[in-house]
View 1 (cartoon, helix red, strand yellow):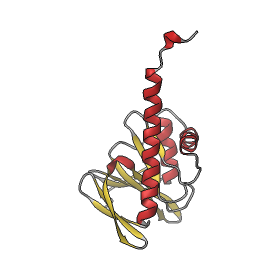
View 2 (cartoon, helix red, strand yellow; view 1 turned 30 degrees about the vertical axis):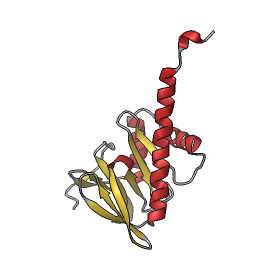
View 3 (cartoon, helix red, strand yellow; view 1 turned 180 degrees about the horizontal axis):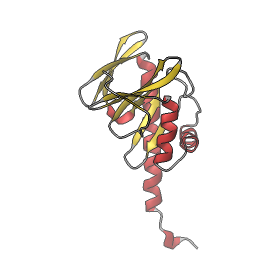
View 4 (spheres, helix red, strand yellow; view 1 turned 135 degrees about the horizontal axis):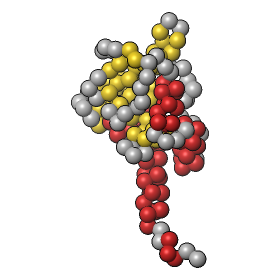
Length: 167
């Protein structure tokens, strides 16, 4: 249940998912966090772009890194905040109207409801139904997980490199 509408917000680690809604011909965003739900007077993609900047990188830079590490440009997950490890993945193209973005590490499990819907159990015990097949959700979840692993390995490998051996 949406209790408040805000004009300004940055994606936080508590976000479980964000989804687009239409209000008087304009696209707004419903933000579902672990303990609260509210509406923003901005599009989901604008919220993601603003949040990427707040955490030190552009959306295009984050998207480019995802494209590089996953070798695809379709439905790319975005590492919003590399300090907290906040990854969101879309259920459709990033430019699709009415898109949903789900937080990778807030998912406890998911299961098929019918041929076009999947239920997600989140880490706080809440369950929601989403308009996506179980197979597509597995693919999107897998992409986001692979991106997380690739980026962590890059950081780990950079720390292991011994600068003293370079000539």
